[in-house]
Image (cartoon, rainbow, N blue to C red):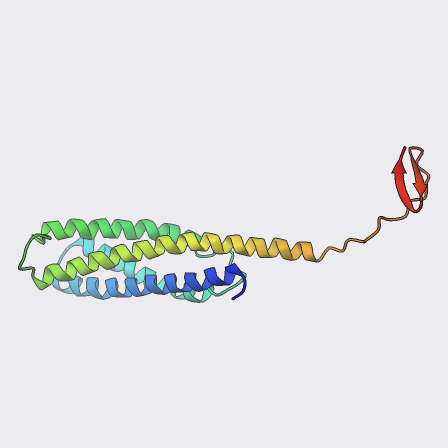
Length: 179
């Protein structure tokens, strides 16, 4: 873990893990809500949670790849928009059923919806963080590959010998000088 790229890959792994766990929690809460409640907003969030749970399992392994070329960046862009839309749908659904922050006797239904809303926002936040770190990881990949390409070149200590056939130069002590 001496290079900064490996530190970013470790942080990227934990962000992907938190993102996946948030999606699994939202998956469980919205699956319960689909069985007990009606509404397309909950079904939309359930579909996004299922897709995230499936698509982001490989991202846990891709986070450790040194040759990661930003494979998950396009997926992160798409899922960040999907998660923010799911968060907005759940926030609107909370207001429809009489759930309010100022009600002192909150029911279990409102508590579950609020928890689902909170973890939906966390899934969006971790997706956004993963997208930013995926770009940084891609930067370190490019830096490593460009740096490795320069190390393979061989530069000689002395310039090649000149035969002195050019009229504007003259050889002095093995070095070329211009007149």
